[in-house]
Length: 152
Image (tube, rainbow, N blue to C red; front, side):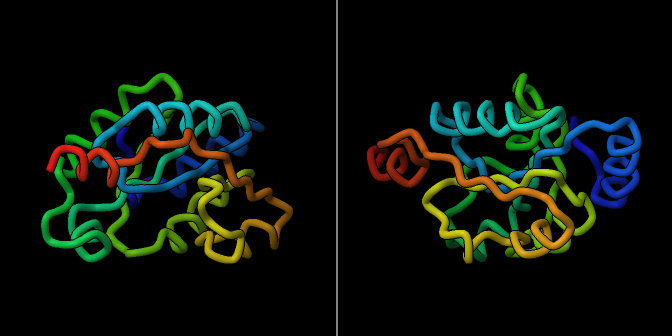
């Protein structure tokens, strides 16, 4: 389910009041592939509720270049929302999700193992209140960049 950014703090507080363990991850998720599916399923398995922060189209262009995203933010959000492992999707327009992570205050923050702990946005904040930061091993050979290169 797509949640408006202005409502995410209230949603997260409600989930915490019900003693649900919140897992958060973020990304572009432009061309969804098997690597994404397995990553999101592993992330969900670390808690009760998975919230996915989704880069807006404008932030994707700043990060990936003017030819990206391939799919617009509404389509990417709808696709993610349809996945069994994803409970909530929230859009963010910044290049990094630090402020969104502060709003959600997840129990577990998840990124791919291709990130060093020092590179993970919000890691210090999450650890400051006893939350965990997990790096998940990615499925080898599966990436949007690789798919785009193959298409070209």
